[in-house]
Picture 1: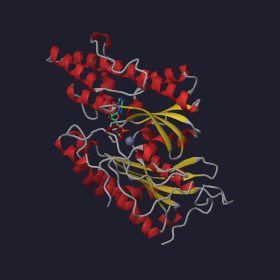
Picture 2 (picture 1 turned 45 degrees about the horizontal axis):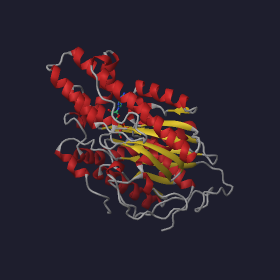
Picture 3 (picture 1 turned 180 degrees about the vertical axis):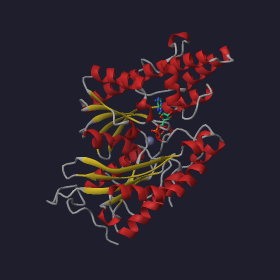
Picture 4 (picture 1 turned 135 degrees about the vertical axis):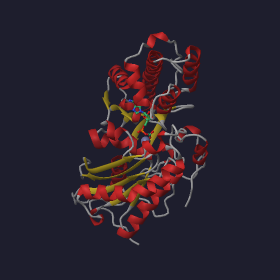
Length: 403
Ligand code: KG4
Ligand code: ZN
């Protein structure tokens, strides 16, 4: 089967051949608890435009378990994905024939959900004879600022979600250097666990933030793990334990106690984020020169106190803070479609043999001129933290699955 690349680009280097028609890419996201599809346009100039962006959150399905249950997530993706894709195409007022490529998040994530999205994308690519682009979910977060703010390379990304905490030098499409990561919990996960411990709703992040605004952070002396260390890594399990011990010490908890504990937790984590990102920017400058921006992504970037702290750090480092709008910071289809378009423009397409990955470090993402990565050793830090609930989470621990 021959797959037609967009006529404006050569397959090898993304060199323009004269056809300036914008590229249209469908993006599919099913790696965690959002079923999402979107259509994005990429002009030959590199400018992006979202034609549709449909996200169905599974929060209600998982709330009773206090985390994502992989089996429930995979089943929910199967039930919803066709409709979500239909809606995305309908809102964009396009038929499949108008597309230039089908992009899908092929990992890292909960493998059942990844397989649902990847299989669907392959079916569409096969039937329509359009190129498939197997996108790394983290790469999609990393490139979103180019869609929303036309941010140019190189820039420093702070990615903090329920599953990931990383500081990354984004040097080009498929060219990422990790400067820092968490040695244990992801930041969003720490917020979620705090919310759960204090009897707040799931996900805990927005609830903890709400409580924290009315609380007295000075009442509890919580640790600031890794503060002042020369590297840019995080460790949050000690903070979580310290918070639990304080809560147990003063139990039973009244409303004011919950507010004060949330405020103390948030203040500690904000100070840690500022310090770690400062170190990340320093490492960036030393290795890659001055970044064009500090970009924040992931659900935690929705937190006001976190954004303010990042703003201060960016000013100190004489750079600009770029934060995509909240609906594009959290998981969505537009970021997958956009990353797909960026890759397609460079001729970086995939075959129908593309694998689903539970783990897929950014260092193993293929760029222009890099060989297909071959099963390098993977560190625990490169996979999503176990955002999943309870014993079912064991199902997420496997390595790459090759269908
Ligand atoms: O990026 P995201 O939507 O999904 C993934 O984890 O991939 O991030 C969700 C995470 C959750 O852990 C949630 O508690 C956290 O982001 N979060 C927040 C806030 N809003 C969402 N954390 C702190 N403050 C918030 N306002
Ligand atoms: Zn994500």
